[in-house]
Image (tube, helix red, strand yellow):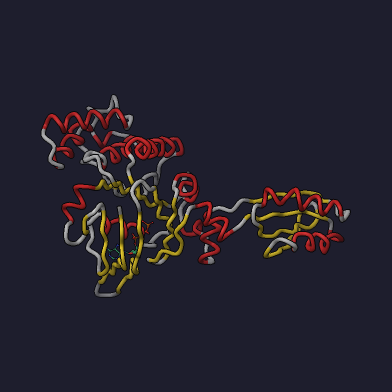
Length: 322
Ligand SMILES: Nc1ncnc2c1ncn2[C@@H]1O[C@H](COP(=O)(O)OP(=O)(O)OP(=O)(O)O)[C@@H](O)[C@H]1O
């Protein structure tokens, strides 16, 4: 559905040259749900804008929905939906008119445009809002209208640029329910960008981590977490038992660390399958007569993945909304 090779974008001004995207190679198959994750300025939006033909690449190639983004931009556009950051219709237009005129824009006749608009009003929970002006909608309603507008041409491939930024948790959950339904019912391929680590983790089956214009990881969230971060298993013991705890943990773990803890000394290590390993470690410590005061397993997040890849936290760069 998407195949890019060496896709690159450079912005030149008199003062400076910004290498926004430095050669992206990616293949996305039909039906995938892929999240581009990265800090501010990583190049996510620029990549999406090239794939949707809104920006010409400086070099490289991309085939999107079976058409070339440079040679056949109109064909690409007719086959995709794009929901940008905070776009949507004009403020003074009514919701239903906005949807109908989008349908006309894509070449539907009046009757077909009206039917499609009515269908989208139903499927995106916009019922009752048809006659309201766009400017009077709440943030969540507005974003659902944005999604509806992006779906008017029944695209096989949908791009969403930060679809849930600024939404409250309830509206976010609601939007995701719609996105999931699109996939299940229509098999739509979905490519989105997000700042929200938890969202990429829970919803995307494939996470593409972008930093400084380059893809630095591309896998399922689960694989990324186990391969690049690993679980952290911690046992808290008395100071006199630290060496024995280290010996037990050290048999199957990497990166042993110690830190003071209210109940003694916390000895922790990076492990595979921490939940399964914890009872084994506890039994071994018990057999060694080491009293364990507390124990836990912390499952890694995508932020730990980013940290292990770059030495920086994604959260430092990101304003995390509620
Ligand atoms: N029109 C432009 N002119 C000059 N520089 C630009 C332009 N658009 C983007 N950039 C720069 O390119 C880099 C990548 O920006 P981009 O918007 O693609 O990042 P992003 O990952 O989408 O960030 P965000 O999460 O903040 O939206 C940034 O350094 C940005 O300042």
